[in-house]
Length: 299
Image (cartoon, rainbow, N blue to C red; front, side, top):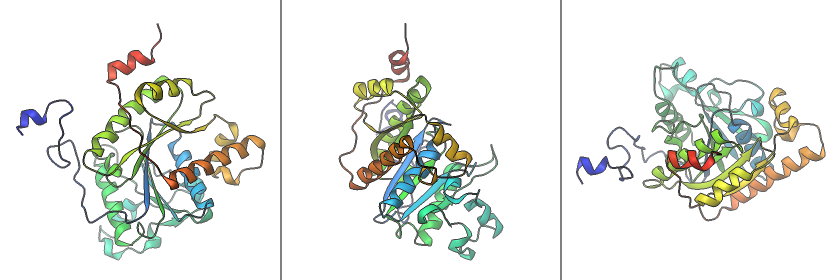
């Protein structure tokens, strides 16, 4: 195949060829753990969703590892009640001699036994997030933490779909998207669907569906799903008790009882059980940017 053919829109390019992909080291697979990578528009509530889903998996008896992949390193604080040292922090402290690190230097136990890792990242504009994720996975593998987990959840930075922050998809079984019932969130979801499908050409990852979050209604999400073949797998409404759980540095399973909170807890437990059982991947056909712009717009 010529280089011109590889540059055609939609042409398949093996990971690592050219500048559009980051090649995966095959030595660092995740064993038998079920691995999920969570994406979505920035600020949509991915960390809240990921942490509560991790807690739900732990509630049904699974050994869970959550990996925060945002340089802000705030993915897991509702599980651990604090901002933890990051993998990059501790590697830097030993001049990147990873053999000097102990597991307890970078892995911290959170709510109900969920194990928590924050990858961290370089200062803004100075490094590659994909490199940080790769180093984190390498370290976890060396310490056998991936093999010792039943479920691994990557909570990934915003709606970035570059090769670096798409690298968790190289390890994942399912890519899950969090969205709200609005234009910007669904627009971002559409691009993430395309990114997951690009990785699916060369890796085992497949679409796992979309979680509607911070939304009273789901009509626009459902309309998009009907048009593309996407599937909504859960719905978490915009409730004040969920907002307050972040302020209290708590999962929803630690908040005061109420009927509306019980419904959210039950939905997380149902979602965790369904993801554990698994099933056929979602087959969706994303729209082109201009197409979805028109699809979501109003005259």
